[in-house]
Length: 532
Ligand code: AHR
Image (cartoon, rainbow, N blue to C red; front, side, top):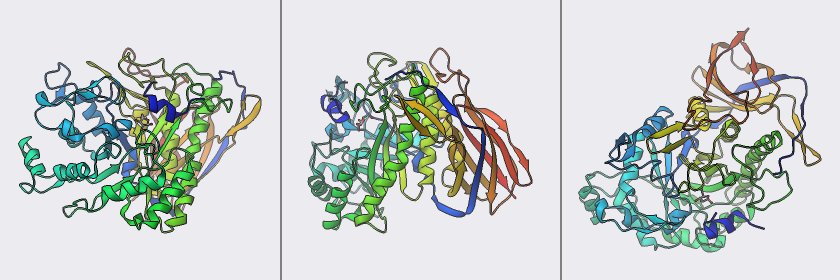
């Protein structure tokens, strides 16, 4: 039996039953309660993640200053432009598992004299892309940086000196002088600092109590230069509440709860075996070639994110009843078996289809419905990797269906999430001889001034859902919308077909302050409604 932990330790690394899917009469009702706010939607839940892994950094983000590929000081220009267009709020770097073997000093100074090292994921790490290249990338894209510090293989001193390098005032320290020597005398004011990554696994195989002691050592007396830092503690893997409970208890006993901004949570959607196996290798399906059963099973397992968030949140309240500590879902997305990589050196890259777009939509809706709990989330990973928004190779660059969902959902960023009740006939599908169910329509709603944004996913392969949308405490006067769908559930963009799937505008019918809308099968929809 292989687990993700085993897989990562070695750094190596369906049931395709034709399911009969039935849905009931298509008639649904959505009620948006303007007067029932859930919380402000942190723009950071639309965050991204890049790691020194396969083709993510080298070729994905970094092409080099002398590349024929259009670039800004070595950074792929098309990627920057695409990120700017969706108002990317934050990017996590340099890992992932890579982070806990990374010495930040290897990635500063003149590029020609940086040392090559062994990369966690295999091969050689040239260190051409380091701290200042990453910060330049963030600056160009308009995103805030979120660092993941090495807790497994470096002492605490290296951590606070990394903070010093990034944030100390001009002229005040040796770090500031080295920063200035690379052309940036002013501090970067990096706010988000992850203290280790997956410390239960590739980040050191710690017990939670031992990790809590390390966290204290790493974060005590880190210089803040007048701008409080947001420390993210290494939290649980998917359903593992034991880590959450023991870590939170230990942090509480050490009086550290108030010094934690967030607890990271990692959840990948990977098992499409329908419960036949929990083996990390055997449970995964193909990214591009999947059955209707695997379509539903992947979305149902993605939908587990909501219960996972609730479980951890409930456990966190045992020692942090005021919920000072928020959840940071800094790795999420679909993870398929190998076979659809861009090429041999692009490990963990995979094809991205309409199915992944629905997973993105339903996941972002979950974060929004839990806006008071989730302070940041980072899709894993931005380019040439698992749940990517873009694919790039040399001069080829393409936006995936995931990208379009982030674009369509962008108006939610910073808005007030409000309760929205979706009443729609549920779906049932055959799960290895047993009936399994999934909601027929679900989504989230937010309000910013007179603008109501309602996003929804219809997972049915064959049924549109005629839906009435009522706004309690408000009245809709006009609206428009955007839908991402296709008659082919396997639809995807690749370098040969960059426009095989993209969103289309939809008109919105408003009657007496209400909306009647037909949600297409296999779709992600965003409705932008103006309130009177
Ligand atoms: O995103 C790929 C890997 O998955 C990350 O490096 C690690 O943190 C996680 O297990």
